[in-house]
Image (spheres, rainbow, N blue to C red):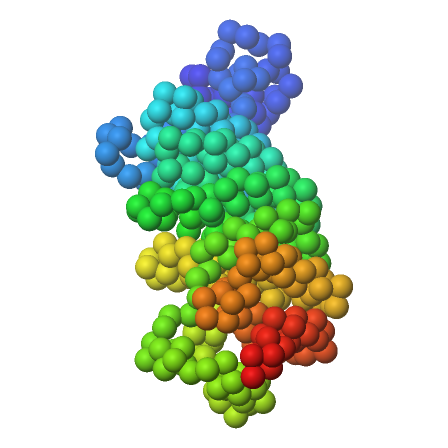
Amino acid sequence: MSAISGVISRQVMPACGSLCFFCPAMRARSRQPVKRYKKLIADIFPRNQEEGPNDRKIGKLCEYAAKNPLRIPRITCSLEQRCYKELRIENFQSAKIVMCIYRKLLVTCKEQMPLFASSLLSIINTLLDQTRQVDIQVIGCETLFGFINNQKDGTYMFNLEGFIPKLCQFAQEEGEDEREKSLRAAGLQALSSMVWFMGQHSHISEEFDNVVSAVLESYGGPKKGSENLDTDKQGPQSRWVQEVLKNEGHVKPSPEVITGVPSWRTVVNERGEVNMTEEDSQNPCFWSRVCLHNMAKLGKEATTTRRVLESLFRYFDNGNLWSLENGLAFPVLKDMQFLMDNSGIQAILLPTQLVLLKHYFIPCLLIL
């Protein structure tokens, strides 16, 4: 009887819900849609904490959000509260599941990102502050990486710049244990997307000097093979002649310059996710070279290129890294010049060549 009355109230007498209160099916509340997203969220989290999230339910929740964009703020509000609650009681597995949902939302609901961007950025900031849980900090960096790569404009440029000091701190984490290494890699991974984002919108952060320092800490010089060992035994005149021949195109450039600095399209797929092997994605040196690649792409005009090179020169000067044998300046600037040449930026490379002349060739001539 109640079901029949409900049908009548909805189809025949839609205004009688406020008049008849004896039949539950005829009340106005019975005609409100069920909050399906709450059930979907509850089904995602497993009863056994050792089990993983229900990926099928995550997909259903994201599809529901895409079809009902007005409910996205309520969905993310529920997820945000759940994440803070799990972090507070140190149930980190459930907090990780919340971030899996957000990362899926980034891809599925890219057009509706303004509806949940502030919520996600707030959670990421909280994750980066979990100093006792490195794996949570790593997840925060990876989520920030995905968030930046899915941006279509510079709306959140100011918000994203606030993360740079923390990311630089992670990228300069000392130690060679797996814990420190993974945190360095995650910090540099997020910085690589940050530098790419700057290039997309022709903007260089005020923290760019700190970014350069953090990136070059893990850059490392070229690996010394048999050819490098023979070169080290040669005098400054022979090394100078070899570099002149390389610059004139008579000698092939070092293969490390080509293979060690991959293009951004190779690193990131269309969904803004890492498209590399696990070994590379957990290697700080790899992400440092990706950052340098993106720095080279910043040089779309002379003013921007000069700003990038000045930050590099300051870092080399402060660390006294101009030594030809053991310094970092030569391999870094050689890679930068190679990348800029490939980008068609030759005219604005004169400052680099002049600085190289000052630090390398003139001292060699004085020795001779």
